[in-house]
Length: 207
Image (spheres, rainbow, N blue to C red):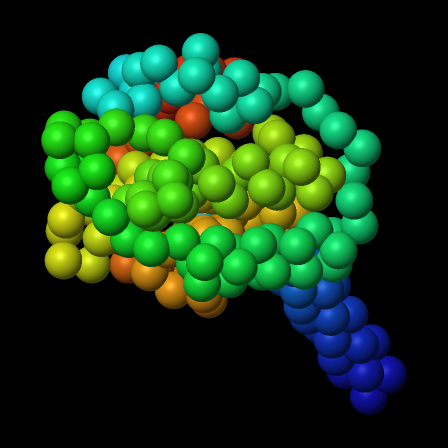
């Protein structure tokens, strides 16, 4: 009888060791999957540029025309909640006070990147004005990147990207809502290089 009990105890002990080992392996695998998922989510929160790209045709002289538009000197960082409040405020303010006027009507040319005039401006002019006003308000220029996209109807469009700590947010003259880039349903084409804003990078990313 004692031998039978000893044998049963031995079998139970081996089974317990195997179960512990299996749980350990599953824990490692589960942790790896979770870490990978977290990294993937973090990566998709930000727009990734993968190659150098020429600037949009109307923005070739942008840095000479407006030095602040290509500035990369870091300023003192504001608290995240304060930055987001300024972003929402200036986006809505520019949208409300600037009239939409095409470059063709205003300059008799197909595309020209410039600050809005008293007559108004088009999408890239809205984006430029928002960038200028946000820099004046104290937001780091490296966090404010001009970008070109195809909108939901796949027409050419320009927006300003605010690089927050949680991900890239889009300031758009078509809406006062500040959306993550991945929620816009736009096709992103190119954007100012975050490290060297005088340069542009190709994106070709679908949100």
